[in-house]
Length: 329
Image (cartoon, rainbow, N blue to C red; front, side, top):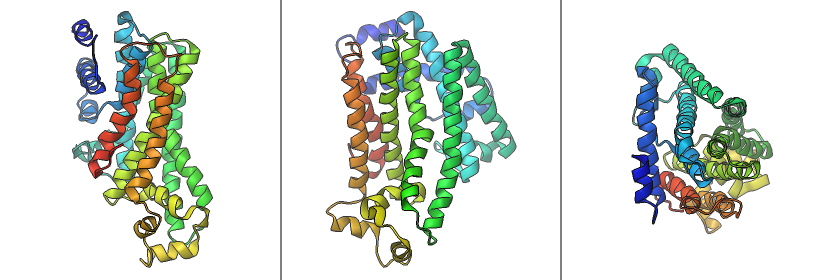
């Protein structure tokens, strides 16, 4: 089936077509490899963005057909790790729905959800071990970053609460915000792209390019995700971007008090500057999308039918998120 797919796209391939194919392949892999009901439940309904990026990097780096099944197995591992983090996130954040259905801990209980998340990580790590020591080390390093990012996200929200209750350390807040973005989201996208390059047996310099490419795609995606959260009334850390844009280092206790009392609004302050909430995020997203596209143009990356998709991918991925609130990149 895969060979037939390749034969049908030799002349033209869109990223949307590539996405549909990889999603189909990864879901079949899940059906083959995952038997546990709760693990399958946690995996259902995902967009599979990280596996898609892994497979795109694999093909863009001239990954051969005889390595395809290994790359697909690695893609399953990255999705297991990502979905496990969501299972635990829902418990910590008290989110009762995930991917259009009740969160796993609502369905099966907190204890079972915690253990299922651990089992998913165990399965993902087992896959990485069978792919060699380098893969296993990369997996452990990335998972550690994800965990630290989640811990710092908790601290960040506490810090944000402190600011809205009269605290005054905006510079630290900005630093923490981007640090959390790097570890929670960008690191997993970067690892997915690196894993694809490794499976393709790409040289170290191309692997490094794929890491930086994935990192920028992840940062753009996280900004789009934060935009949707703000537009839907979930302020949390997403409020930081417009606060930075409007007040910068001038954010102080008096301004925070006025915001809390409704005497001033971020939306009105943005209007005075000739912009709006959506545009603040749009410009931030564009910044990282363009960085990813610049990397995709590198002459080190082989010329093949997949190379143009590296440029198309960050736009497609962020638009799929941002279009929920009427923003297009």
